Image (cartoon, rainbow, N blue to C red; front, side):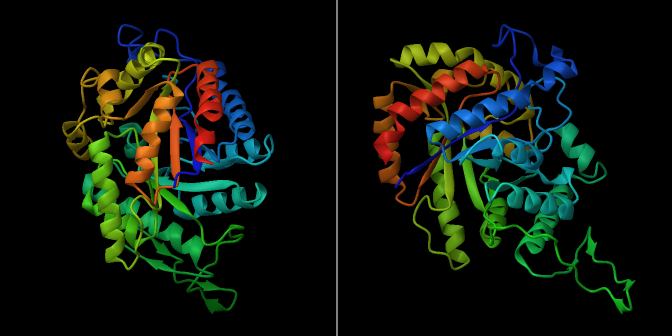
Length: 381
C-alpha cells in the first residue's frame, strides 16, 4: 500500500532558453556565483517538502558540470545543513557516486551525517554515468567491466564498514587494513569510528538497465532499489525480476517491496495544460541526458543505457512519456486513479517518488509539489 511520498532535486540552476530550440547543452557555461544557486534552491525545496509532508528530499551527487545541470558534489555535507533548517524531512542520497570517494571515507562521512542529523540521511550508492566523472574518479585504464568490478568491491567495503563491528577486506583493488605492526601487534582488522546512529543501514541503488548482474548484486547485499523515469512495461519487468532474485537469496518479498517507483510529474487542471507547462523542461532534460545514453522511454533506450551508447534527444517526446507512464501529466484525480492501480498491481510497494526534470524553475517545482501534496497525497493516508 502506498503511504510514502518523496521527491528528487538533481541540483540544476535556473536555466534560460530551455527546450530543443533553446541553448545547446554544450554551449552552457556558468560562473561560480550562478552555480552556487543550487544550495539556495535545495534549502527552499527542503523547507517546502518538510512543510508539505513529503518523507524524503532526494539529492543527486555530480561533479564538474559547468553547464549548470547537476551541481551538488557532496550530499552528506549538504544534508547536515538542510536538516538543521527543517524539522522532519529526510535527505536522501540519490546517489553518492562511489568511484568519487575512497569507500571508507564515504562510510565515515555518511556515519557523521547520520549522527548530526538525528538519523535523517538516507544512504544511496551509484556508479555514475558521466564519462568525465567515471573516468576521472574511477580508473581510466580499466574497461567497462573492470570499472563495474571496482564499484562492486567499493560497495562491499562500505557495507562491511557500516554493518560489522570490525572488519578486514582482501580484494582485487583494496587490501584493508594492510598487514602492518601497530602499537605492539599486527593490524588485522579495523573499525569504522563513529558508526551510524541507525543500524542496520538502509541502502538504496538505482535500477537503470535492469541487468541480471546488477539485480543479483543488489539482492545479495540487501540493497533496495529505485526505479525512476522508466517506461511502465520495463518497470514492471524489473519489479518482478527484483522479487525473483531476492527469493533466490531467501527473501520472500511482496511485489514492489523494498522498491521506490518514481515518475516525472506536471500537475494542472488538464493534461493539455500540464504537458504545455512541462514541455520545455522535458526537452531540456532529453537534450542533456540523451547524448549520455540515459533515457529510458523504450526497450531500445534501455539497450542503449546498458551499452553506454548515446541516444538522440528527439528519440522520445513528452507525449511518449505520458503514454508509457514515465510522466504523470494532468489533474490530481487522474494521478490518484493511476496510482491506485499501481498500488493494486504491486501490493508491496509503499513508496512513490515524484519529481520535475532538470531545468524546471524553482517556482514551478514548488508549485507542483504543493499541489500534489494538497490534492493527491491525502488519498493515500
